[in-house]
Length: 162
Length: 94
Image (cartoon, rainbow over the protein chains, first blue to last red):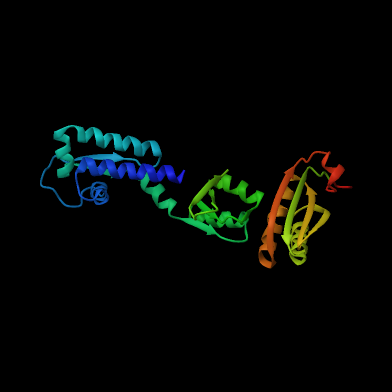
C-alpha cells in the first residue's frame, strides 16, 4: 500500500518535472498548488479545482497535466502561471485529519485508547507486539479509526487491520 | 447464565493474571471458568458470558494488565463449538 503511494508520488513528481520543465518539480507543484502566490498582471487566470484524496484522483490529475503539456499553448500557460490549481476543501480537510495519528508502541490498545485517538485523528499506528482487544477493534470500526500494524523489518507502515 | 461467548486473556506473570481476572468479573456479567498455566510465567484466564459482556470484560482486563504487567494475548470467541469442551476445559461446567 505505502509502496504504491510512494510510486504514485514519484510518478506525479516526474510528470510535473517533465511538464513544467523546472529544475525542481516539488517547488513547482507547491507554487502551482498554492494558487500562484505571486500576483500576475494577466487577467485571464484559469483556476482549476483539484481533489487529491484517492490514488485514482492523483492519477487523473497527472493525466490532466500531461494533456495540458501536450499542447504548446496550454504548456506555456502552465509555465507562466495562467493556469493554477487549487485543492478542494475535501482534500484539504482529509490532509489535516491524516496528520493526527496516535502511536502505541507497547502494552495494549483498548477501547479507551481508540476513543481518545478518535478525538485527535483517525489513525492508530501500533507496534508489532501490541495487543489490540476485540472491543477496541469494534470501536475503531464504529468511529472510522484505522489501525495500522507496524511491520517487522523496517519501521514502515504495515498492513491495515480490519 | 447463558454462556455464548468465550473470553481469554493471557498475561506474563501471576499478579497480572489475578488483576485481569478481578477487573473482568467486576466489569461485566461474566464468570471465570479456567486458569491455565503453561509455564514460563504465562498465565491464561478464561471467562464465559454473553458476547457483549465478554468483550467489555476482556477490554477491562487488558486495561488492568496494562497497569501492572504484561499482556501477551487476548481473544474472544463468540459461540464456541461444544466440541471444544472435550479437550479444552473451557465450558461453563466443564
